[in-house]
Image 1 (cartoon, each protein chain N blue to C red):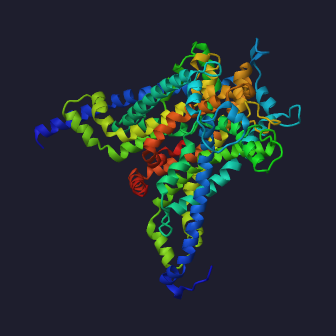
Image 2: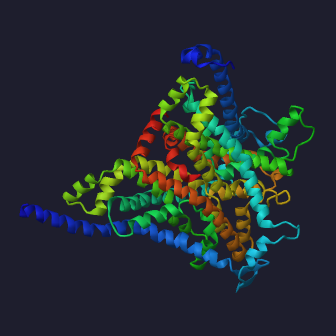
Image 3: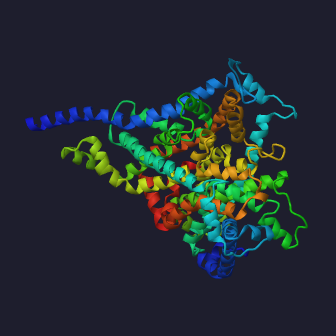
Length: 334
Length: 297
């Protein structure tokens, strides 16, 4: 070993040591902002949930007084109507999510299989994908407002149904529990099924194509291929999609908020958890109750997140290489 | 469906199933047509109604375009009694542009920090970001709003823009992208050439990351443009600072019998127009990269 070589080696080592500081510098802004804008607020939120702290009648500040778990108790005890409000809101949220999510997943799965089928060779895929993905980018509040105007008593849908002789008088879409919930579910479905289709397509294209060939040569019919080959292999991605969709579902806010003008009508049947949270914060700055509700929402999301975290960590630890190939394949097909 | 034994073989199946294949294709196209109709119908009605005058709208349903599109556009654009949409669009544009720039730049910077350097706690930092990725901003809103009141930031755009520096999902995407396209040899070469680390990032790494940055800029711009929850809580009381989604929401509480419905439809057209324009030009690019933003839910 020459002197020179050792010298450069030493230099390298010294340099790599000093480079470490750049790592810290580069990740610093992210962590500072995350801590200030998310982590500290998160702790303040939890802290608040143990205090009585609100504006009485919008004027007189009550508290903050330490009340222990009273806010949680209030959320979890039956109210005037004999219902436990937080369960009611949670039920509304989940019900409306499921009403949209079941057709969303099923149709997306079917479309993804059709689009990737070599036998079917669907033409115009680019067009169809462009159309079904579009609602996902549309402003949810504008889309909701559009539904409010279109389905209002004197709106085009009612006019159309009356012209066609289907209705004698306007149907009040927003006053009937089943119809307003269905409309909200329909909007969620429309906004998300295109997105899910594209995700599942990428999943199917990530499966080794020779498996399908082998199954067909062995005489499997297309339904058999779907249920015995495609679906089991796709299951991890389907589960992942369902869980992330559910995390999104828990946060359901824009659509029911605008459709019901924040009231969750009729009879609180469309009030979601985040709508109630918004009500606590904006109506009388009820940070105590808002904090408690936030913690409950947080716990739900966190439980579901653990799953997502695990599956992503697993995917990540298997090296980025397969991911790259899989993306290339997707790009070619698309 | 006829039953086949193994003896009939693959070829036999292919021949006799040509009829069912055609039938299946018809079914597929019918379904696709229905879904396309569902996706476009409501937006078509919006455009049609935006082209009809208030009287026509009150008069009854028509599926065809009328001639008042530009009258409505003018009324909506100059309206101040309902909502001032041009102010709203400018406000939204300002917030969305700045936050998409901050998000992409700092996510790339953070990803590069973890990708290119070895330091103590690197793994912990990465795991932390992954762990908080799915936590929605709503659950810390109570504390965030209180902080904003405390530091007199209510009604300011800062609390809507600055938090976008820390976007775990965008970070994760950038990190994955770097893993696949950014060999550390390039960075080493720059070092040999005497480039300092920050300059290396700005002049060598960022250009390589261009496609990833473009994708995330589009998605974060759209996300910010459409965002309603936090802006409504922070800007609620100051009308001149309202963003487009807040304005659209205020339309909800008006009594429409007394309002120009043509303009109301036009407001909605204007609210979604920028995103639609972006989408019309870049739909192929966007769709190709949807899987990248998969964790968005």
